[in-house]
Amino acid sequence: MSKSRLRLLFRSTAVRLSAIYIVLFAFCAAVLVVYVTAMSERLLAQQVREALTQEASDVRGAYDRGGINLLLRMMERRARQPGANLYVIASPTGEMLAGNVATVEPGVLDSEGWTGMPFRYEPFTETGPPRPHVATATVFFLDNGLRVMVGRDLGEPGRFRFIVRRALMVALAIMGFGALIIWFGIGRNALKRIDRMSAASTKIMAGDLSQRLPVGMSGDEFDRLSESLNSMLERIEKLNEGLRQVSDNIAHDLKTPLTRLRNKAADALSEDREEVRKLALEGIIGESDQLIRTFNALLMISRVEAGSMAAEMSAVDLSEISSDSAELYEPVAEEAGLCLVTEIEPGLTVQGNRELIGQAIFNLLDNAIKYAAGATGDQPIRVSLAQSPQGLRLSIADSGPGIPANKREDVRKRFVRLDESRSKPGTGLGLSLVEAVMGLHGGRLELSATHGDDAPVPGLTVTMVFPVQKP
Image 1 (cartoon, rainbow, N blue to C red):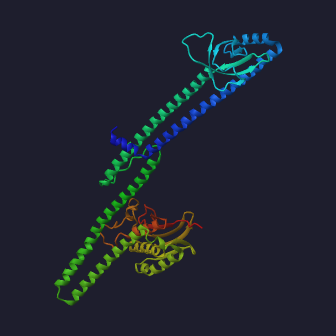
Image 2 (image 1 turned 45 degrees about the vertical axis):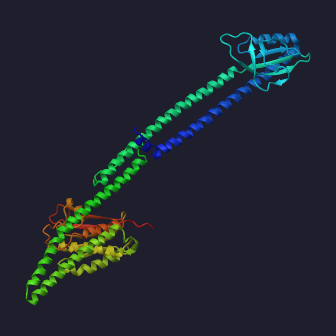
Image 3 (image 1 turned 60 degrees about the vertical axis):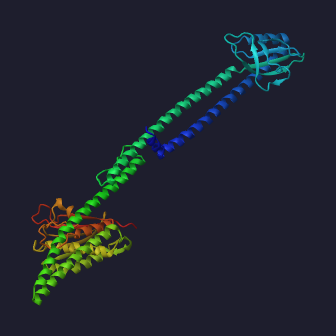
């Protein structure tokens, strides 16, 4: 691994956290070793002290029962046992008279009680190279002046303490080495994942919005971050695609009216008669009004999708708006030779924007009248509003040519019109606005055939589904 990659590795949060963990682990391990060793030494010292205290009591009791002879026999018998204690009988001057020890450190037999510090001694026989012997003991004086020492060699407790400490150190070393390997592996894995994310980000910044950040199977914070960013990228890609389509559609749909405007203006300039000029100017004004309406619709859709009108939400009587809209369009329907029928439950309210909901209903009624005119003779346009478990359902059904099932998603897009000849008036923005309004209100827009997709005249039913209001 190069120095730059190593520096980058140590800049990783995961690696830093792992390093902190290893330092804390090492500190706790050192404390554990010291604590266990100290507890082991204390336990062994306590056991040795209790055993020597009991042994000294037995030795004194033997002297009290049988004198010096019984004391000597008892010490000789116990000195032959495996792992025997240290026994010494000395004169009042400190000269060693009997026992299983050749010499002891000077001053050990001078006072009664426990020896303050471990002392050195030499046994009678020793196989192998000489080694230092250390012991602890208790000394008591007999009534005839003799001095008796009962002790214990500290070599075995020392070896036990060494074994415990070495076992702990080896175990902790293995654990520390394993932790170091895991830490290094985690750091390398994190660095590789960051490299893959950086490579994908570089391609995305270069303009390839189809790229996605890698997502693994672990479900950790890297995967969650990648999933969130991928969702954002998918949304951005769709918005860019929609923007491209809208730009193409605007260029296509506005080219014709702008061309007509130019031709009418040229005709007005070339005519000498005032009446012809006036008619040309009126045509120019009409075309301009249509362009203004198109741009106003685009502006309203943008405002709705951006949520800039969400602050104007209030309790709205949906039944009243539906009835008023139907009443307003009833003369328009009669003029087109259609009948408009309402089936509206009273008193149904939603939390929303009255102006936007009204505009959406106007768009749907206008489309229903426009496309149903001439397609049917006696089938009415139905406006219905009812409560359902999913929310309020406001439906407008006509008996026109309808929309094929495979086109019902496309017509929601801006400037999409099934009338490719553009013979009928319109901009292709009506359903786009309704879709945006329903999105702002947390609802959805449903399109279905009024009489079935296989009927000669299937018709179209557009349903605005408003969500259930929370109390």
